[in-house]
Length: 103
Picture (spheres, rainbow, N blue to C red):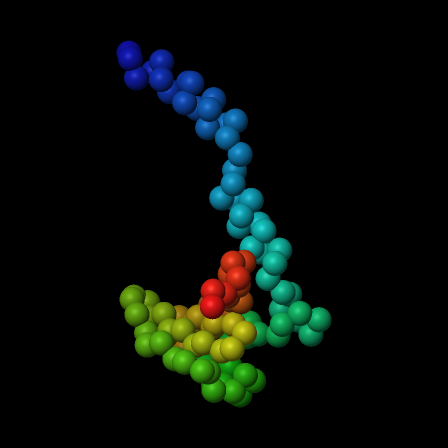
């Protein structure tokens, strides 16, 4: 078969290619401050919307629920909180751009 003689070389090339996407993801994870008092405290998974409001105050912006299950985003100055229904699923520190601001 003609296809089989192309598969092996293609597989070998893909194995020799650096895993840049995985490396970038690792770099991003390493850059995010820890979720503790020495880093940046933010809501933890399974906290309710009521608990987040009590602990963090009112968000700067609330983006309405989308999808099924409904996912809601609350934007705070230093992080964004994602809710599924009424529970936190993740809080994320936005990546800062490395390019300088243009005048």
